[in-house]
Image (cartoon, rainbow, N blue to C red; front, side):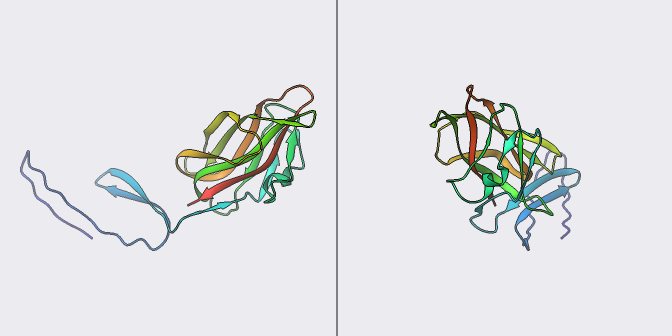
Amino acid sequence: MQQQVTLEPGQSQQVSFGIIPQASGLYSVVLDGLQGSFMVNGGQGQWKSPNDNNDVDGKWYAEILAYDGEINTEAWTKTPGAWLWLYTPGPKSPPVSKVRVYCGTEVGGVYQDADIVIRVFDESIDDYVPVFSGLIPKLQWVELALDKIRYVYDIDISWNSIPSGGDGCLFELQYWEV
């Protein structure tokens, strides 16, 4: 749609445009060099699990159990700082607004709160974005909001610290696809 408006210096006039989006997703708008965007949410969204992983440092065990849909199975590491990358299904990275994690740190058969760090890889900016770093209450779902909707290629988790003889235990990690 094209509109033409003529203004004298110092005048202003509101102009509006209509759009009927055909699908959910992020839409870009460009008007005479000005850029913006808006998100069309096609519904409530839903929790989804990653579908693959990469044990970058080779320091994780049973990685597939971190996204098998069961909170009574776990992936684990003994090494603080060892990253586990959990991939979202392709071929396009989904729009994600939050992640949730169910984890704990196990020492001698007793679970403690987990000192973790989570980041996401946002494909739209081709870079990592921090989500959270600190203590997570043990053995309960904890939701962590992203700063905005991101097109997430992978979700990465690592433990900041693990007591001697302990394990960082990741029972489940999921993302909210909008």
